[in-house]
Image (cartoon, rainbow, N blue to C red):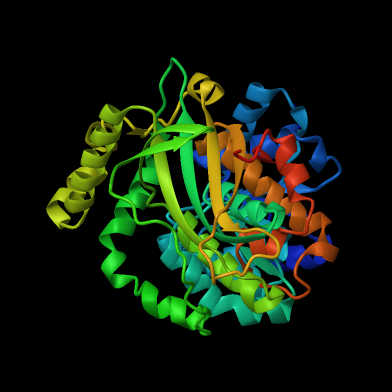
Length: 440
């Protein structure tokens, strides 16, 4: 097997290289990062692209690349250059950014480690995508770096994983294909696990704890006024008010729904603001839900989430949660993450049920009666779909410059990619969108 190439982090090396790698995967040794590398290596879309991996430890990066080669049988992975970079070492991040066209950042929690990478990327001419689902981090990056990214002509797009490409692009997909004017959308996540069960990697769990514990300090209201200063008209007709747990009765989806507390809603709201301000389109209202087939399981999940959120608020109990993710989550999260078999068996469906007005109807003057629905389907949401989503986003930045927003900046996924070929890229990774038949 050919030896790995290791790149000197001295900035003088960059000038000798004379060009940038198309993609640098930062955090390639992590659970998600290693699957991102697998997605790139096994996709024909990246044939001819120059790829490098980055992280703190050369030994761990070498070991990860060796493991990936053994796993997928693509020997070229062993030739990926290695860049040593550490979030706590600004010089190393600067050097990494100067060697990249697009940085795929897989190092979280982003509220702790994300900004340093974004700053280095924007200041040194690299675009940046990540898989964050942390609204405070995402919106802070827009507030602080939007203008500089515009000046530098680079694109910073957060939440490019399963949070929140299925929801954000799916909502926009329904809006653009709705036969009339869409008013509001209710979305429903439905995850399927196979006989082997499923456990998310504990990194997601730790990020969730930090997000809940820091919610009061995030000042999201202030952030949102800064990045969305224009007050949009308040619509007369909004998403229906629902209980904490309620029955879903749609032809395409039967089950019990509870509020989905992920970042999807906040991402879509930013996309709708952009669509209104830049494209002059009517912004839609959105409510997001998680769907379970069993009332019993829905009750159990609701109870766990409630207790978990309370325990996150107090330092002593928070430490216990952080120390024992397996036991405290009843093995919904594990330090070891899901097995390959579990990921192979897992899949998701993301439904979008919209209400609005038919063409010719008086929008906002009469009650919306026109309905439309769409669905996004894909493989294991945690890592297989997430990897497919983020590498599709990176590819859109590399390949579709003519259909990206004309100026660089900090964008949501729908705002950045709605006119690119990202739907084709996603389809190649098994992530599809389609309109559902209208109800009679």
